[in-house]
Length: 99
Image 1 (tube, rainbow, N blue to C red):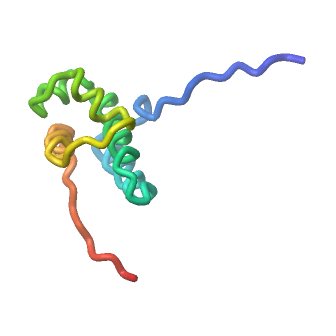
Image 2: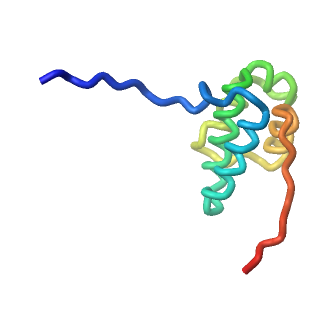
């Protein structure tokens, strides 16, 4: 029997346009259930797609601290989230919940 060869899926390889990046973040926000590290990881995926060095520079952060903040292992400060979303060209917005 032949072995099936698999490779690791990296969503960052499939986020090519600002619209795809925004849609991905929107989906992750909806699925996060309030898990800030999940959202931070999604921002990390988008930052890798755009280029971590460029995003770090535009956000005014070191590349290393950006990787740590968006690793999904910790919850970054809201100021970091705002800097990163601005550097990514993504605008956060609020809508009322309909319960």
